View 1 (cartoon, rainbow, N blue to C red):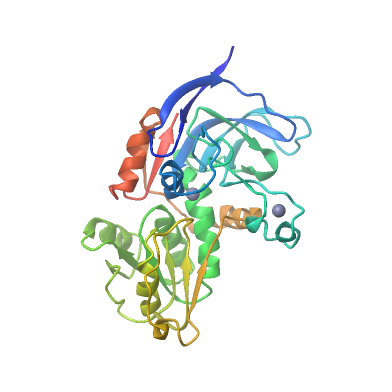
View 2 (tube, protein in one colour):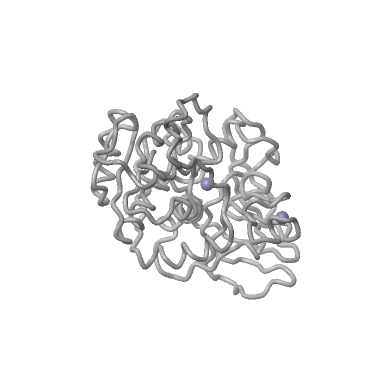
Length: 330
Ligand SMILES: [Zn+2]
Ligand SMILES: [Zn+2]
């Protein structure tokens, strides 16, 4: 019998374990994909730590999947065997709830999420709903493209929510920020990077990608900013970012989970400053970003880990030891 390998989370708070499983057969509407690379996202840490409610258990994490079509389920059109495809966080939506009906499928009432409520890409193979898979063409390295599938897509949605201002602050200079900084600079915007205090490696990294200024997250930027995006899961950054934006400025929280936001004086929000969160992605976001990223010459800085070392990759992300993104190679 053909088999596959997967790193499995049996219950939150425990390490992933490698398991051999029977190779699945794609059902109607599904693709079986041979995974060639899967990025490690901060959301995976939230799943592993039990900070997101009701995961499917056991679960195979991973929602930044690049692979090739190995088998095509009944009724699937538009994909061919061996075609390179990407699988994102949004695994499926209902298509009929009020949110789906008005084009906000990212807010669907009964969504399915890859690597959270259905098995994801920390594996040699995965099965995905073909309607939520994207053709990736043949340009670029599989592992270097993998972080596009979440850090890129949800980063892009956050970036659009931040508006058209010329000056943009990025709090937490990890996978998403390093991608978005490249897009923003390509579009002629000015980028200001905020990192943990004393993280000069991340500050130098931001400047090497074209950020105009980099400093600690409790430092004021050299001038008030049009907008800021918070990628770090730290609630205290919300008042910090509100202080950094100008009148009418926007603060966008790009993560799925954040520590509590400390109370702050109304004067920080006053003068029409906005705070908002970004949830998930729509397929339209993905099509936009996947068209723009190659034009902008987005190049991901990655560290590769063999699939079996997923726990180590998660730990390195947790400890802030990574520059850019971790990517698992089965
Ligand atoms: Zn829906
Ligand atoms: Zn993610």
